[in-house]
Length: 320
Ligand code: AVJ
Image 1: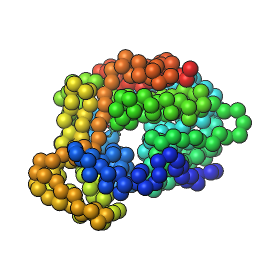
Image 2: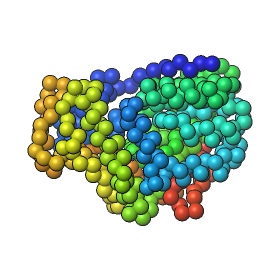
Image 3: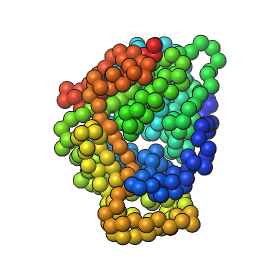
């Protein structure tokens, strides 16, 4: 059984693509920003798992129910002996539903940015699926990537759940889908997409009563303190996550509650009272608007599934 972690690094230089590099560049801009992929160190990945269990965060349980309900149909579309490639694999909870339904899956290749976290979750998956070939890859799926093919004839199916696609602006989302299409060598892609809905419900999902999303957002600052010796005061910033209805997206910010300065890698950064740092966008689509985008990215949108309340959607896209 091959569960060695391989590291993919291609494209941007490690310097400009590192957490430190992104922070130094992003905090020098006006308005300030930090890229959302840096949420996911080991503790951020754990906080995200806690978000997925929150009563307000309907996305995860709705998507899991859709996967379970349509698993047989999805398995048939993926075909026999498929290699499942998951982009941003996280806890690996969702793929178990697919693996249980799939016909003799050839391999499972989870790709994630958090190596420590991936290593742990892959170990427990390997124990539960002893016959499956596992190829965990540590890396950033937003960079161009080529996954070495396994020997013998093999079809790939991509799995991109959780509405992670929503973290990209529509143009970047389309470019990402195009790149995934080429990584998949003609195979299909199963994508989970959060839907446009009542803004009050959307707002609640990113502003939970227990404050877990606030901790998740502030983990960026705690992580900078841990890894880079920065001196952020996480209590000096507020979690702010409004829904921008015109742009169909949740926008997430850390807002400085006072005038303050922070030192980071020998540089000083000043924050005005009330100054925002943009940390995430989470775009929402209609089923039709997502299918249109997928078609423009070179996919043939085939099946689409949703729940009774039309909270979330699962799309099966075929390469054409
Ligand atoms: C990474 C896209 C699944 O945007 O809903 C959850 C991240 N941020 N709560 C989302 C997130 C705040 C999440 N996804």
